[in-house]
Length: 351
Image 1 (tube, rainbow, N blue to C red):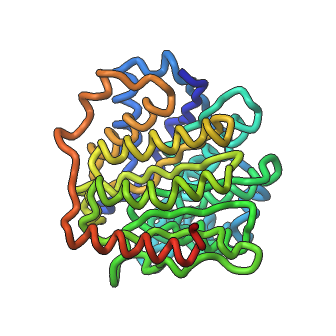
Image 2: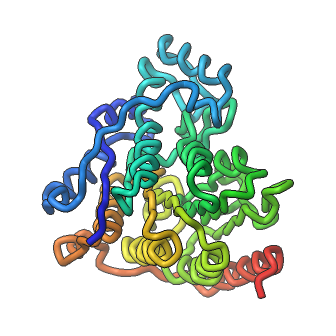
């Protein structure tokens, strides 16, 4: 069992878009309830975040953009982007407290009291310096990576959300202190339209961005093949001092917005491997963030199982949350995955 913190405030419920928008805070409340039903908080410490200052936020976002969000938050109408991220009254405060939760997670890890810190209210990897995108107002992933550089010389981000981590990539594109790995679905006209293998970073950051674009229909077997062939050797070569894991639930096999096919078993396998890598190379330092996930029941089960594994409390009570089966990729999909793996190995000079 490891010292694990769970960052939480009921203010997280305020970050939930209205009407038929797919991003609802129901995912977080369902996850917390599943953990409570299994007495998880006898072993995991609940910690409440406090809002960070605008000065901290300006590490990754412009002052002009922050002022724009504050204005739209008071106005309570329109959009913060081209149509994915609606403004509502109080959205600035709702977004800020969630990002503050990720900063709190980093502070706890830096302080050394906890091995692991979890903020399922975070994981907003689409937000850019000057604009919102993909339901994300502020980018906590890039923010805590930049803040973490004051304490750690090597940080690795492993993002298994179903969409490419385009905002994180853009904000850290020339950063050679942060290794950025994103596994995501990649297909013509699929949001956000980036994340091919040839996007590897620029300047000092060249080679520190590794994209693993996966075809629709990628099941547990194909996903784990790509993870084992690319992510594990890259992490072993890099030896990070801190790992940040974004566990978006939208790589699930019947998520309404993504066409990947991970089951809960596939998710657990990946999280277990990342957890092991954190203890092998990062003195156990691991931050888990949430991310996407629009099948709320599945996302809650995925996050609960993942948290139990990270906290070292996974047992038969959590087994009941699993799907009754693992998923398989077709032969055609497996061939495309193997081809992608070969391309990545050539680009990044795997021996």
